[in-house]
Structure formats: C-alpha cells, structure tokens
Image 1: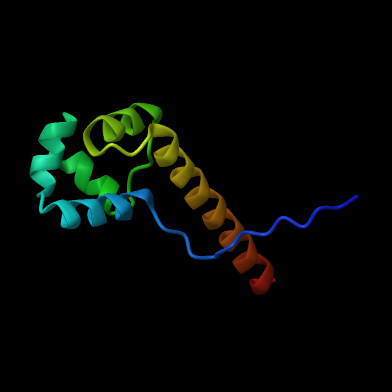
Image 2: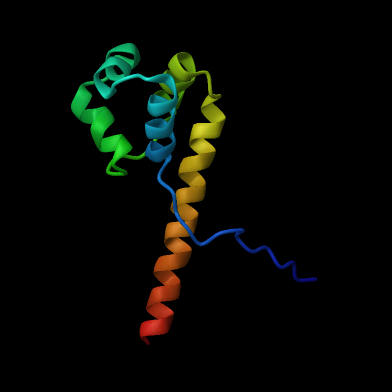
Length: 96
C-alpha cells in the first residue's frame, strides 16, 4: 500500500528567519541576543542569514533564551533541509 506524503510547501524557510522575526517582535538587537545566547555576534548573524544550521546545542540555547522548545528549532531545520533537497532534486529532474 503506497502512501502519498507530500510536503505542504515548496518554500524553504531557514530557521534563522524565525529568529529575525522574534528579534523584531521583542525589539531586541542581534548583538543583545548573541550576548544572551553566549554566541559570537558573527555566528548569530550567519544563522539568521541561513548560512549556519541549527545544532542540538544551538537549539538548547535558543530554547533557554527565546522560550521556543529545542525540538521545534531542530524540526524547523529538518523541514528546511528536506524542502531544500526536494526542490534541488526537482530542479535537476526538470533540467534533464
């Protein structure tokens, strides 16, 4: 029996974009958040720009400071990775 499991969206949103939204909602600067997380500002900037993936340690830090459970951050990263891979494969299939 085949099950049709399709993604609800083909739009890949890096988890860092959600952090950028949180910063805006809280009126907090990247530097303030980086200090609260104990991260170098450059690391946070890279994460927000989608250049760094969420690790388990990062997810724990984000939970501690922002209150969003660590498993949510890891889930967002997994969803981003999956959608990116599906889109990449689709682009290759279209180009063939």
